[in-house]
Image (cartoon, rainbow, N blue to C red):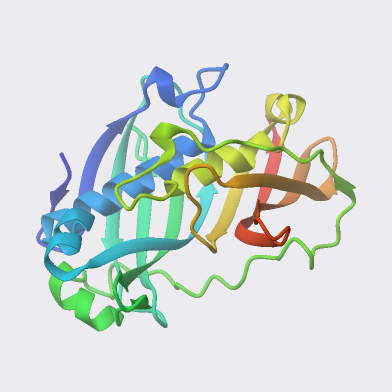
Length: 265
């Protein structure tokens, strides 16, 4: 159970389960995004800012906009990670949150910068972060702070692509739907990975994944994933990703896009 210390940082111990791993018993990329979502949600909930409570009392909800994860190592099945998280003061309309994880030897496993907004459901507008800061509690900026300005992801259309991979066509499933009745944000990560192919995933491991959620998607939507290399060697690779929805009028809507870097296992 996540505990909040006097300095307003949240701490939890999370174990890598077999269901979190790939065929090599290494944690899969969705595991890291799930951890970020889980500890962030638990920290907010202990401050009275869970999605369910805000929906019932204020018709508000959390929406993730961006997550940039840097991977120092990939843990294995049975490994326990000490996860530390804290919220920071608002950056534009975003509520930044940091998540870091360490192994039993205090080596950092990954570090994440997430950008969230709190949306007014009825007005369809974001709430100013100052309203959230007073409730959630911020740690001492001198001790716990990272620059939330992580720049922009390189758009798929703007990237210089050297090789384009086959398009994949994932289908939303029943358990992909979350409390807000749309596709859970971690599902987009699974879809993104579906565009990489088995040979690539057998050969490389991630060093950085930086993604932005642009639009909601729902059950029965027709989605497709586009993936392309911007760099590729025997030792490393860089890619751009995007997920699109095919509309009934034959137009395409951008749902999600991101960049990733990888190195040979």
